[in-house]
Length: 337
Image (tube, rainbow, N blue to C red; front, top):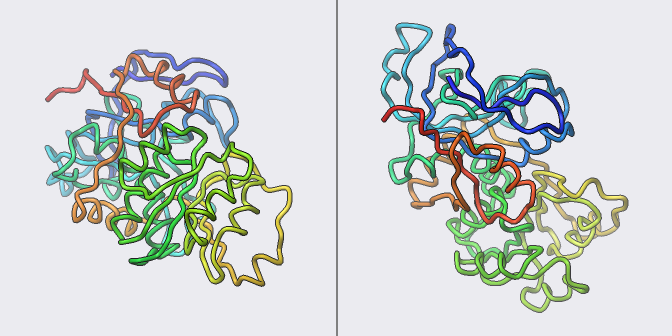
């Protein structure tokens, strides 16, 4: 098979020929039709991720067709169009992932930037019928992360006011779509006016540029505080979010792309009785519920652009620039069908 291989940190992905993987007991061989990028892939390429090993095939998101299984009793999956749940070995608790065994597809296990991938049967889900191949490949990691953060952890309700920060990234866009589908009034922040305008075109009621001085004051002018804030940046802006959330509100964090907060005004947390929630990926139940939620509400991923598998390094460079609005997808032309 052809695959994109990372052989060392801070090096381009290498497009090369590799042996086809073979499924073991309880596993399926998936012929990939499309894969999608996540910021996780960039951090791994830069050597800024825990537990990196080389060589490795990156990629957590994928959509394709099952062509073989490791056990005859799983043969019913052969020929089915599927999407892959990238959360491996979640564990038995719905409240959190197993701290020792949990992994994400694409490191340490080889991922989806290839013509074929082997994954556990339990991580297969039928492809949503209302999505094409590229859209379904863009769904898994960002979709389940946004669903757990927005719907399960923050429990967004109809009529609530929700702020989604950093609009343009995959998780933030899904959070916007999911919160709107739940009946909330949604506002956004971004580093560019263009992304705010595009979010408004999707249904956001307004937004502000967080690079502007006084951006929190701008938000107060368009909303008297927020019942829920969904954030993947953290950093020193987190303290401002605690100021913007309503008393008794919820702030849910699914990432820290701007690093850790150097200071927080603890008084805001206890005096306003804020619920500060953490969220990472999602359980198998979360994934199944997320797929069903997209089907019921006819939600499709926002796709910025598509590349071929051979152009994978160009796609990585595009993502590292941070200018995309939506998911970046690799179409895998070597796959049949």
